Length: 138
View 1 (cartoon, rainbow, N blue to C red):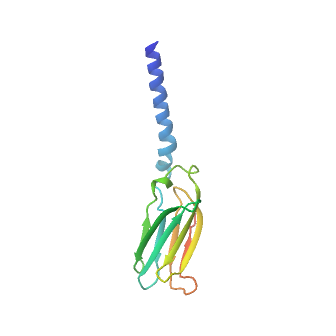
View 2: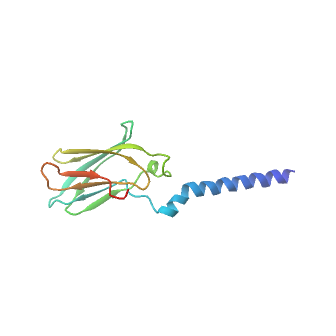
View 3: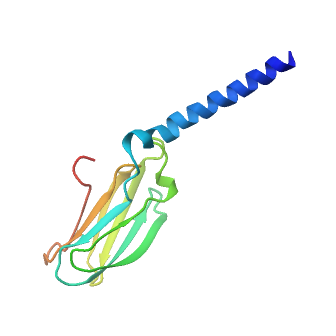
């Protein structure tokens, strides 16, 4: 009788482990690695400093970093662990606030999940020097 309980307990543990692998690791094996939190590229001919701030739906800061973008340089920031949960579990609205060194600021709100990212583009347009969007197909 003791042996049966032990086998049942081991079987339940193995089943739980397999389910965890299926639902947590499985999507990464099927879809691939997570996309970055954001990418930024400078299409201008001069160097720009950009400050990227990310806030969650409670307006708490998730990220506050400043980057130097040389012409045609593309940078990306990996997603923190909190964004790497399987799709649909941790999706909530986040606000991206991007500020150029001259003080021009643009904001963009979206749901962030494992395989979505935000693209920040800096151009020389005087009235709209920053564009923030999600790449097509996401």
